[in-house]
Image (tube, rainbow over all chains, first blue to last red; front, side, top):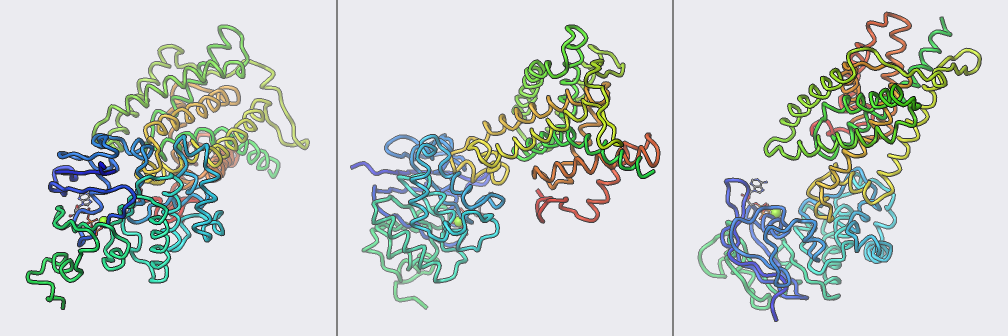
Length: 244
Length: 292
Ligand SMILES: Nc1ncnc2c1ncn2[C@@H]1O[C@H](COP(=O)(O)OP(=O)(O)OP(=O)(O)O)[C@@H](O)[C@H]1O
Ligand SMILES: [Mg+2]
């Protein structure tokens, strides 16, 4: 079976500065792929490049076997790949409901928005309670849920999620991971970027480690040794026993 | 004296109706494109001169010329939009130079075609007096276009809040990348904002021609007023635009009544400086909006 999303030799960056150096990535349908890596490794840049927000200067990337290169973000969304961005990026001056409705903006979504909204409300009851509130007045956890709900309104086949747990209280992180597990159980293909390595590993089918713009490790989750992963993560030499 | 002041308040309120239409158009384009269209007042003026030409050549009432003006102004707005689209670098800054240039070209075109004479409607129906409560006087045209202005503003407000395209416009103004991730093509929304801005400018232009007077330099003044109102409103709040417009309108008529008509153009600037000094993010603005 051909992978749903395939990236090879991808290079991308900002203007003169190159960030991604020949990144390879394979995402199987229905699986959860977790990308971990230290700050500045290029994880966000990778997701943004996939979505057409950052220009890819070399390499290839395909979704369903069709190229993503040069694709416009709004077309990629209609092709079924959706990103829930780092830092949530909700529309602060718009109500929760209006934010969610933006997720149904593509033509297919407009016809179907009420069903999708019901589904999202069932998943995030708090959003239903707060539907009339301005998104800018929400707490960090609520904003993350809104960002996720808004992304799910787009009815994705592949969901890219960038650091959903960043800066949130442990209870909220639990809630978010429960929802991710539900989504996985429903068969959604997920690409999750997380710094919370141990948390993310529970969910993962496959793990990538990125450092300095490269994927330096690619392993099925079952084979990942957390100690070894952390050594690579923090660029420590020596074996897996060196956890300090 | 009190009567004079009440009269000034009333006249200023009526002027606020079309000032608001002009300012909202400017604010919408600023919201989506981060561009201040310095030729916006000239678009308004163009509509006024179309109304003048239709009246002079065919004897049409100003209201009847609105569809023609919509086409002329709409096409001109589209040309401006396409020219801005050709800017490759530093769009925010370079667009100022570009639209300033377009404004000069348009002013001179108007001067060439229609000369520098002061024009106003000769349609007596619009100039008939309407007296409110025995004391407040206005022309029928002023009242009609104030009502049209408020209705159009309400319609735009509704459109922004309750339609897919209106919401998309707010989304693009709020966070461009996030809007793209929602499947929005920002270029389309930008064009749409220009078009809506053109529609508002058209109605405002016909209003100015009917309720006031026009000459080629008016366009420039209107751009400045619209800019002042937009900043007062805190960029992109419809109720704020209406309030700011009324404030400027009333300020001007009060100046004319209490001081000198020649100081009228200064009033807007004084109010502008005062409010920026006391409330730097505008009447309705939130903190942080000024930074953008
Ligand atoms: N808009 C930008 N312009 C220039 N350089 C950028 C930009 N965004 C990111 N970078 C640079 O690209 C590199 C990778 O950043 P990126 O945000 O992709 O890392 P990340 O792995 O997501 O890090 P984090 O875990 O902190 O989110 C960094 O060196 C960063 O400074
Ligand atoms: Mg990141």
